[in-house]
Length: 454
Ligand SMILES: Cc1cc2nc3c(=O)[nH]c(=O)nc-3n(C[C@H](O)[C@H](O)[C@H](O)COP(=O)(O)OP(=O)(O)OC[C@H]3O[C@@H](n4cnc5c(N)ncnc54)[C@H](O)[C@@H]3O)c2cc1C
Ligand SMILES: NC(=O)c1ccc[n+]([C@@H]2O[C@H](COP(=O)([O-])OP(=O)(O)OC[C@H]3O[C@@H](n4cnc5c(N)ncnc54)[C@H](O)[C@@H]3O)[C@@H](O)[C@H]2O)c1
Ligand SMILES: O=C1O[C@H]([C@@H](O)CO)C(O)=C1O
Image 1 (cartoon, rainbow, N blue to C red):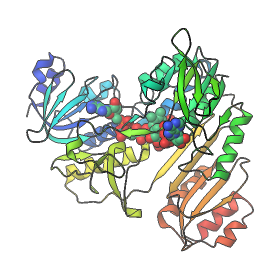
Image 2 (cartoon, rainbow, N blue to C red):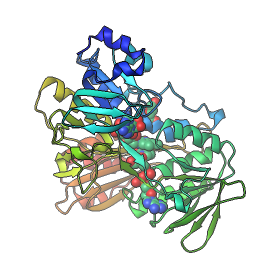
Image 3 (spheres, protein in one colour):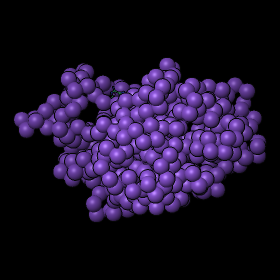
Image 4 (cartoon, helix red, strand yellow):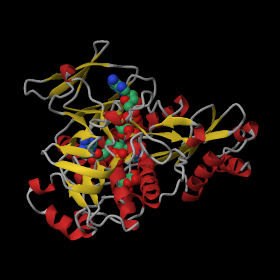
């Protein structure tokens, strides 16, 4: 292995010098999980001269959630920009800039995605042709945005997808000129981008195939509250609709969305948020889970091949609490899986990851918005639901299974103390008195009833 000093010197010399050099630890992917993994290497004194990050992006790891939140504030409302939100600031940690990686002796290869992988020789080939030999490999390639096919206009100018900061820059430049936008998809991206568009005073229509927004998590009744708020902000909904194609105007830019029923929605800018696909290529041979996609790992993020690990969005891992294999496409898991994997790898402690799912969103946060929205969900959204509160501003939903166990809990506009109760409830799954919970007179009252069942 090269010494730290040699490695640092090599960072600045010609590409060919990198070739075939052995690297003790290589992280592929420079996203959220990679940033937290790098921090864990540093905390264990194992980064300097030993760690290399190979990234497709041009900048060091950052907190991706910011891209559809602070990043999309209109220019006069002080939008977030790099280097402001490099990892690990999103969880109160240090801001790891390019200098931080240099100071800690971490080699980062930017804009040079890994294109080929050979498990036998333990080598990776990057798009610029570098051959990297690894001791241990950590796959943290995340997800890519699902796209509409090119043949139906999915690649037209003015059609945006949002996964990385380059996508966000391109979207911001379109928003600056836009008048009428169409958002395709009623999930996280759809809801966050449509709320952001309100801040730019744009005529906004959301189109999706289901009958309510956030269909993977929200109940119809919960969704209705949020939809009404969006409508009060001028957003229009077209539900139960599929896109037939996106049409271009005479300038070649997108000009409308044509729906399967033949109706036409005009738009000068389209943002597509129709889900994400795990970026398993070129690591398919490591072992892809056929049910949830992604690279299959055990409770210490080890794949079926020794010395190869996978973390974050791309990992299909045992979700111990619910006894199933899952992929979780949220930042809390990206952070925690990275820390867990690197800690167990470096300390040889056999500790199983025992994750409690946590999702959240925040929208309408920009200054001057009539109402800010912030919600959190912990646990599993299975079983019957009890909803308490009428969104003025609080509302809570409890998911309860057939044994009366509380499985999941959602809260809008809680206080920090109230939010801190949610993981305790979802983790311990207490048996709750359903009749009492249903008769709760306020969200505060309902949370107290749930707390007393702990
Ligand atoms: C716009 C947006 C907003 C989000 N907001 C929230 C939120 O509010 N709350 C929440 O909980 N979650 C949110 N998420 C999800 C969260 O960001 C992800 O769960 C998290 O980023 C996953 O981390 P990761 O490191 O696994 O993947 P990523 O952060 O996606 O990082 C993967 C990295 O690998 C790179 N890469 C891929 N293939 C290769 C290759 N072959 N070679 C080299 N590099 C490669 C990619 O370019 C990328 O840099 C959001 C996601 C997006 C896209
Ligand atoms: N707050 C957060 O946690 C947050 C915020 C933004 C993004 N993300 C992550 O980013 C990724 C992408 O988010 P997303 O919102 O695109 O995914 P999503 O799965 O949340 O939502 C996708 C939505 O697209 C719609 N859809 C699916 N197929 C369609 C089709 N062919 N035509 C039209 N609509 C279709 C559905 O309405 C579905 O709800 C996910 O991993 C998500 O977890 C998370
Ligand atoms: O977890 C998060 O990290 C970023 C941002 O807070 C970083 O500054 C963001 O918007 C989140 O929701």
